[in-house]
Length: 480
Image (cartoon, rainbow, N blue to C red):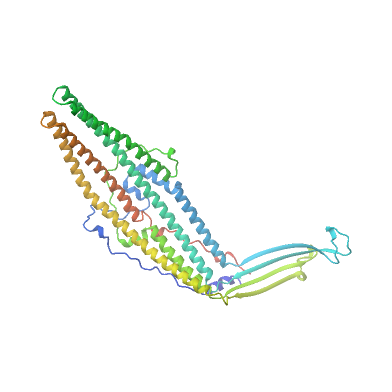
């Protein structure tokens, strides 16, 4: 009878539907790609350390800390380990159980308490026993195996959730990082503007001293300069908040992280989106939704198995008697073997309702899966459109800044020649600063959109990255 339980398990049937992945609403191509020509497409989308496409050593150093010290990711990893342990717990239901129960009792006849006190006539004696009991649910209808299947799917959902939490934290960090760098560039821009306004103030002061300008020109130039100085002081608040957010994302207290100032990157990496169908393999949230369907499908089998009798085998083997030194003899041996089956006769429609509920849960999981796919497609389309439109806007803003700079130079020269009033200079300087700030904001948005597109495409993750099933060793327990 070696490996008897394995033979029976392999010969048993498994009720309930076998899982098939339902179709998802995936188009052939992205709508927003029409008319957008990628200048130098890469061979494939980034994998692994996807942030490396931005070629920023500081960002690379910060991103590598997320998977190790970000507490949300650490929590998701602990949830995954718990799910793996629950798979092994479910697998234990396929094995027989064995227990050992040693016992000793003191009893008497004719009312004597023996060694425990009392003075009645009689004799006390000690009884020893040891018994081993074994039980085994044969799982003829596959209820336990469907539970294992469901729990394995839960573990895979947890693994995908871990990948999704990691990707979300990494994308948030990259976004905060580029927002911080935009603040650094804004500081540089305002400092350059302050230098330019200081020179303009000196020009008006010289013109006033020469008697060719009014005191009002000097006051106006001074007010304009002080306004930009105040604006520069306010930039530090937003930058500090971004730095604190990055510290928390990397698992550190805000006081433990300082990032040296540096300008915003001028190059936006090319991120080829590939085909829409690749999202089904590249998005961890889609993988989690798909595995949830598999779990709910397996639970239908668990519910259907309740219609069939639960068959168990049981047996005991032990020894009982006295004295202790002669306990393990044939005369003292006791044993029993048995089989039992249980089948509810009247249960008020409970099993029918349970199966119907399981089917409804599966249908809900299918709808959630398809909605997740639709949401992923929308995110990709949104980011592609943003990159396309922002690219055009960036070119227009670059031209606008160049024109505004020429207008400031011309107007300032005309003021010095006395052909225009100083308000004309103020107008052109204000337009120049506004165009420069808009150009900076557009560049910031382009980099953030690039991060968003990479995240919408699943980062560097693949469904093949899901860990293997929890190992199952049916030969771990062998019956004689």
